[in-house]
Length: 349
Image 1 (tube, rainbow, N blue to C red):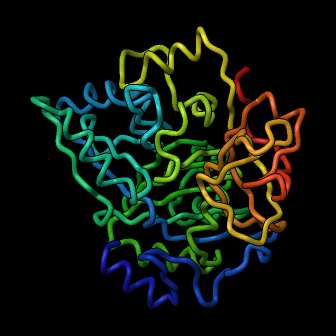
Image 2 (image 1 turned 180 degrees about the vertical axis):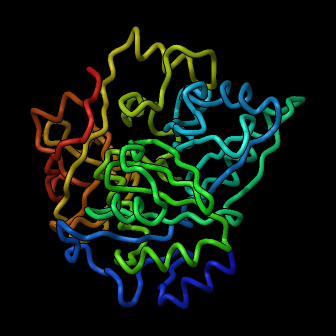
C-alpha cells in the first residue's frame, strides 16, 4: 500500500489487518447496519494494478487472456481471466486502456499480482512489452450503494447517462470505472486521493474491504484467490455471462479446452449466488456437500462475505445436476443448507 495513502487512512481512523482496512472507527463495522439507503466508501488497496505498455502490448495480451482486447477501448473495460494450458483459471481480472492505445491496466487481487506478473513476463520473449506494478502509483477508491451514482456525478461533473456498466470515464483528477448502476471505482494519483476521499466521505460511510466484496458477490462477479486457483474453467464461474470469454478470437493458454467445453461438451458445473446461515466464517475453497453424494463434494465456495441478512452471502460453483434435486450443505451434511439467490444476469444454457 502506498505509504502516504496509508497514513491518510490511519488519520481517518482506519483499522488495518494484514495490511488492509477491515473497518473504520466511526464508519460501518457490522453488515447488519447496511440499510437500503446506505452508501459506502472503501479503500481498495487489496486489489493490485499491473500496467502493460509497449507497441506489442495488444498482441501479447490478446494471446494470453480469455477476453477480447478489441472490445477494450478508452471508454470501455472488460472482465477476463488468465488460464493454464488446461483451461484452469489462475486469475480473474478487469482490464481497461491506459493513457495511450498501447497501454493497458489490469486489476486483480494484490496477493496474486507478483506471481501472475512473473508468469506473464516469461512469455514476453522478444515482444516489445513492459510490465509494471502500479499498485502504489494509483489509489483505488470504491463507492457503492443507493446514492453512489449521484455522489460520482456531482463530484466529477459527469453526465449520468455516461455511467453505464464497464464504462471508463477519464477526468482531470481521476478515472472512474463503472462497475454497476450503483457501484463505482475511482482510480487517481496519490496527491489527489485524499481530497476525493474527504469529499465523498461527507455523503458516504467509510467501510472495510469486505463490504465492497459483498457488493461484488451481489453482482455475481467471481474473484479468483489463492485457494481457488486452477479449480475452475471460465464458464464454471460465469465469465461467459459477463463478457469475460471470447469465442471469436485467436489462441490463448487453455483456449482449446475452453472452446471444446463450449461447443462439444456439456458444462456440469456453474456458479450460483447463495446465502449460508453460519456463525463461522465461510471462505473461498470451502467444500459443499449434497445429500445424494453423501460425503463427496458437489461444489466449492468461490467468494464469501458477511450478509446484511445474517450469515454469509457467497458465490459457489456447484454441479448443476444437484442444484434442483438435492439439499446442499456447507462443509458437511451437518452444516447449514445453502439458500439460493438470483443472479443479476442471465447464465447461458
